Length: 583
Image (tube, rainbow, N blue to C red):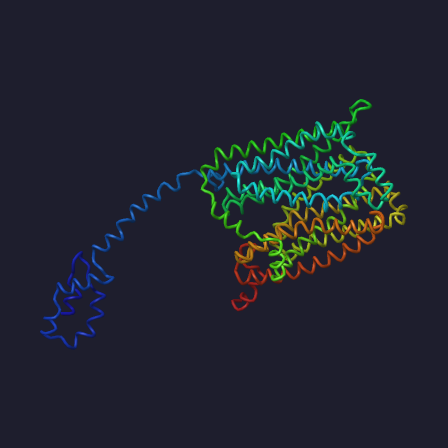
């Protein structure tokens, strides 16, 4: 009976061969008429039909949808791709790239112009910068953050964008047309001169802020352009409409485009700074240059707004952005107290915070001293501005080259070496700069053979220091910092980034400024503070290097643990022990 059951076809033509193999050993020794009476074809079929090996009817249910699913998937490949991406992707990326170019073009012009205004202003100098960053720029940044949070709860994202960017465009346009021409009437020059005689030269910095308040307002607005328009408006919008895959492919290209903008804007600053050579006597050459530069900033701002408007009308409606994901990110924001607590608990985040703070302090210590020498070499605003234009062009060119090399550095030497290049570069060039400033008289005969004075040599070395430090920062330091977040779990990644944004960026920017303020007030001038600033620079960079080495060990361990390697594959050094047995 078992052999009959094993070979006889049932409904749907399916032979129960597997069932026969299972039942033969158990039933064969006891084959009898009684057993045959108990096993009936109908009962056996109904019982077997309820088992997983169900004949035909169940198979039809499983197989029937397959052709429909294939048919429904057929239209998916229809959109034609260009260079591996769909038209919608290019419709987002190309306008975003144009926006970023305009934003960075404007930022370079504003950054160079703000230094010219405050450093070369009457009764002012490089000593004003530390006080500006601490007592004017920082409160304005905090005030904007509070205002932005309040507006974000009441306006749509599009309305919020225009509400933030239009005041910048209006201010920079009105500064060149109204505030600068009326500076003599607006600045309390006599009052501040009397105040300086009473208070003494130790307080020249704070008094210069009051004396040239419109220039200082320009300085703060230019600083805010970098943090508000670049970080908040642009990157917030870009992260909203791009996917992770698109971001990984195109965000690095935005960095290259930014440095091209740096080169173009540097040449624009140089061009407008040299127009005074063709002006008749008695005409304010710097005023004419300022009109041209601010005109370009206004045009750039209008282009940014126009591109954003077009994206909102033509592209954004086609994209289903992750609005819920954005709300979740807002929940991860921490108060200052919570940020301090979180930093104290995580050695990994503490080391990352040390890197960010140390860079801010170090670059500030060298940069302000360099700008003091720069004013002494170029007291005329047009000459100062022309030099800054060349400086920006050089920074863009070197950074562009470094960004191309950075991929090879990461692949060949790894994260640890890449993270150490920036502090070592800053230490070597910073010490060379401070040595030249302090020992200028000793090397004067040697420099005379090259046709240079110690002052001009210090200006050139300081410029080289800034160029190489900033280029290594943009091409290596920033990518290293962002890569260090990748292996972390979502909670630590989100809270750690929020903590560093809330505390470390402002602390790094104002930390160096506070150190210089105490030095200037205690010693009387920035020049007298130079030896001490050089010593402090060495201490800060040593702490930076130690933190980078510590973070590299933790980062390497996390890569091994999670399998998330920065090059996409396990490093060769980690593969060698496993390869030896195979040999």
